[in-house]
Image (tube, rainbow, N blue to C red):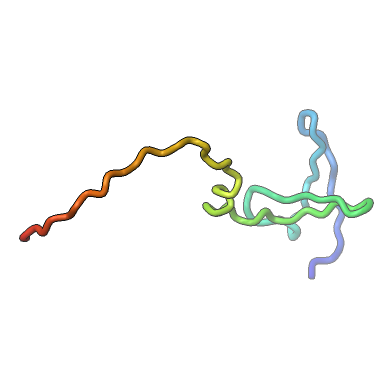
Length: 77
């Protein structure tokens, strides 16, 4: 385990940011941040999945047209 280190807080536009020291770097480009009392917990964001994206979409309320039942015929190849 990496020993405790201090990081630096700074402003990036209107946001506060933290400079993470080497040895504490996280994989990827996105993180999940949550607050637990006075602590901020920063974790790597889980990878995005197609199912996760589909779960965020609203359902369609449109009526879909009937699809005619087409009879298949044999084809010689």
